[in-house]
Length: 264
Image (cartoon, rainbow, N blue to C red; front, side, top):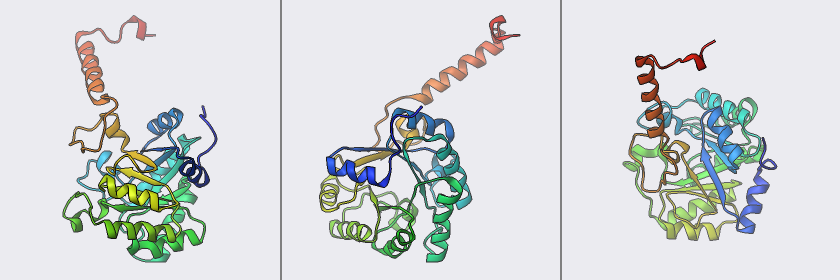
């Protein structure tokens, strides 16, 4: 089932121009990507947050390119409508431009992603410029950078308005089609959004961004870990799943399942 034409870079720019908000989510597997796509989500990021959400790691740093290509491939196979973005993992683009281009190219060639995302502002603008120069669409990411968690001293809100504005303008000039604003006060995000011609996608960055992104498992209430302040839980699937599994265990032990209805 398709809910409309495929979302593209052009579609996202038109949405910003019209003042239409962009709804984005992370996804890491076929079933959830299919559900999100059929619900009408505009953009799906296959985030390196898979390391924390699916693999149970403490941060995103250990995620590999092979893992990202694998998860992006199965998400892309599920999607008919949304734009799929592959997240460049730690050290897949920082070491050299040739390696960055090769790894970004893997997302488009091997996984079916339409674009890649990488973290950093002015410091990685030369990498963004190299990627966009050979036709690889790039979504930038400024503010709180999970791959720099140790350097930043933890997951801290970023408040240096001058630096953030400079980073935003630099990645736009380098050719990024969009920029994620993470962990930035709402007032600063609003100024950045007004200053750019490319869409801003917020996460913990207030309501004035051109769009929003959340981790799907956070939105659905699947995680047992701490829920950040910026997350709104729209469902409680962890509780529902626990109830269902407990009911199954009970019926197996009581001999109620399988009944004749579920037997051949």
